Amino acid sequence: MNKFKILIDDILKVSKFTKTSKKKRRIILSVFLSNVIVFFDILIILIFTNIFTSNPDFQNFIVEFFMKNLFLFPLIIVFRFLFMYVEKMNVLGLKLKIEENLRTNLINEIFDKGNYSIADAYYFINTISIQVGSFYKTLTVLLSSLLQVLAYAAYLIYSDFNTVLVFFIGLLVLAYPTYLLTKIGRKYAHLTYGYGEEISKETEKVLDNLFLIKIVNSVSKEIKKFSSSAKNYFDSSYNNLKFGTMNALLPNFSTMLLLSILLVFFNFVKVLTLDFIGVMLRLFQTLGVFNQNISLINEYHVYLENLYLMEKNKTASYSENFQVNISLENNKAIVISDATFKYFNSEEYIFENLNLTIPRGKHVMITGPNGTGKSTLLGLFSGVFYPESGLVETHSNKFGYVGASPMILNSTLKDNLTYALDKKIDDKEMINMLEKFKLFNEKNFDLDKKVSNKTLSMGQMQKISFIRALLSGVEILILDESTSNLDAESRQLIFKILKDLNITIINSTHNKEDFDNVDIYIELFLSENGKRDLVVT
Image (cartoon, rainbow, N blue to C red; front, side, top):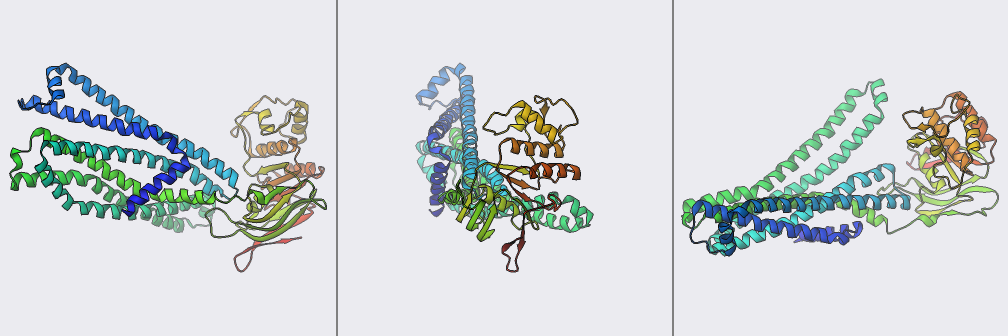
């Protein structure tokens, strides 16, 4: 009963989150079509039985009609195929539509909320949306197979109630193994999910640090750890599949076993007609499908729980904790007051009671080891992230950003330079910028020239990002390892250009040569109690 309640709760919560209630007609259509297919299946069984036995006792009007018009028999087969095709495509279409809706919903939520890490964002948009779409596909198949089971059972009861009664009593005896297998399968489904996350993290770590691992000769150590994670995932996945397969095959096994017992010990051979046996076998084939989808529903609950965490995260909005204050006093660019921040679905706070002031028109350098929160701090400065409590104020909303991996459109040079700009830029101004940054070794710049991340070097892409930011009329420029792919000459050129501008520059970098004369240094570090702290000089 508890499992049924969990299933109903899952359906209601997910329907609300994905707005699937508007597509209930598609579910109803699939259920209807599946039961039309049941009608065709029973009709085909009856016609075949009549053909092979020439049973004179058939009084069914429909069967008699088709027996007199056997030329219609191929049409029954064709229509059955068409109905099955439409039903399956309808289910798959529903699955894909759910994925589409959910992906759009999730990416809007991630942009709006301001406390999702890149890893969490990627996981929700890709993994969760696919699994929830599959949940709805499985649910639809489950409902359809349930009604099919009821339809086949109704026919059998109508045919020979006593035989069916004895048969179902026997099935009840065998029901416990099904319950046990489902319970064990749910356990391994949760284990598989956990080990799947573990091996994903191990894979990411190994690939991101490939050079380091090989150079310091820690390959064998990392392979051992990876192999352990892979084995755990394989073992749990195999057990999950093993018990799931047994659960799916159990109805068919139970049917054959009970039939053999009835035939041998109860002499039911006289009452078990070909049509009765045919429909009974079809019934328990459908029961196998039903059982299999019950097991899948249990597995999807793991992913749905993660979706509910995101739903809870929607209940509180922290956007009011980031404000653009044009009249910010005393020539201040950014003021952070008692800010507290942690990422969604994390227990660890990155910053607690953070207070920091960035003066207007100054060059600020942020340094510190990996993991100390440099990128998170940049996100708080710019409104990409919102503090859970406290306040971030900025004198301007004209932010620019240049990162280590610039975004380059597969389009013209002009389109890349003017991406997301809300004002028209004169061609001459763009060309002057290209010449100033020495983007290409050429005299005549073709703004309609096609460029992409395959035709440009990383250094050229970063230069384009700088030009794009300056053309926008930026007042606060955020740099995150923005010169990591530039040579010393290009770095000097770019920072000479920036120093001549009256803008606030906040530069997170490991390269202390970025500025010769930095106005403010902010060094982030982890204190002895594990908390992040900073020193301003």
